Image 1 (cartoon, one colour):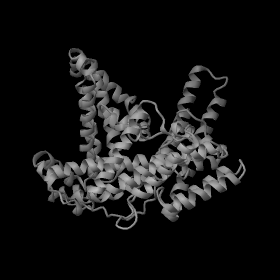
Image 2 (tube, helix red, strand yellow):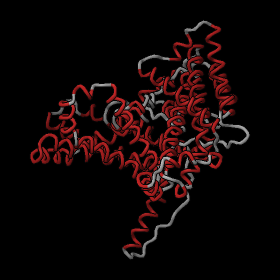
Image 3 (tube, one colour):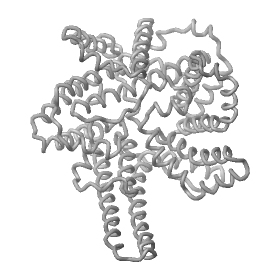
Image 4 (cartoon, one colour):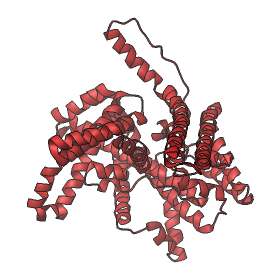
Length: 529
């Protein structure tokens, strides 16, 4: 019952919309909660207990931390400043113990289910090299959908209460709904409690405006997913599976195709998710903002998977940056290498765990770790070269302000992103290395003209449809970048023109979608993370 299936769009979603609207304001949140658990169970069955267990842990930890904080406020009254300081230290220790305990449970489950076998296999290999008689056995764990997403939401909830940003929520149902809102439970976006919980619990009645605007976005997401992304899936799969058989130019083209596929699938699914939420009057955080208009990789990651980047920044980068040892590192680097040296040292110390965890979050394979380290190296290279870049900008002011240079920056960044996606999609680290060597050492443009398209599961018509789709997505993205909302424009059109647009939006996926005879259903890529 994935987002793009007929079962979800024509049966499950309309049924939930009807039940939600019929129920009174008081009961609407419970309709959404039941829908979330049903949706989750349709994929993971009894593994729903993982989600429920995480909800119980974060709910209890939040209340406990909040109670400790309130107890401190009551006991500090009438005490001298020195006594308050000692009392605060004692109660902060209690809060930290609860925080650490809850994080161990929440992250521990994720680690065991998703990463245990990866670490067991690699540690066993190390032990063999050291001739140690230790072998960690692999254990088959069933992994529920969305565990990487909802675990981050649970962690942010507990940490925010610990830091005093939010008070603990007393209503268990509200916390449960925040964790189990059915549109976002599989692929995000990763939201914070103060962003969505009140909206979800409010039980806002469905309005014609929200229904219309949400449906428009769902249709746009379907177009990107089943017309563009799914059509490329077979060709990409063939190229990456048989990478040793192809010329570097073909592998480079496959990497471009995968980048197009991944963007249109993930952003298309986010359009569906955000559109469905909008039907219920809930505004979810955006996850994409025209990433391929970025002029450097740092900007790219501020536009791509925005909520993951924001989570890593708030809960990994800043905390690591403010730790005592990193501050000392910065002080020593400043004394020896100056301000820029201090920035490089602190950035390296804080960004390394960010990008290591970014790679690991995506999966338990070495190519995902290399993917994260690839971006770490690129971003650190940019920080390291800042003085040289500043000199270049100063001496070539007219050039760097030109549109041509902006286009060059965008193309350069896109090439770097495509290389990263090749590493990301490769069937393991070894395959990624071989593919990169082939692309940069054995590429011949003539190989592109000799491609046997049917062997890749596509034909010229497929290519034409994909190109037209990419052009349309690009144009819409450029308009959005300029602040022009196509959806708002459509709803202001005269009725005949507006309904013509609606029919076109419905017919495009139906006519050109990659489904039916000759096509296999394509699994959601990010649902596996």
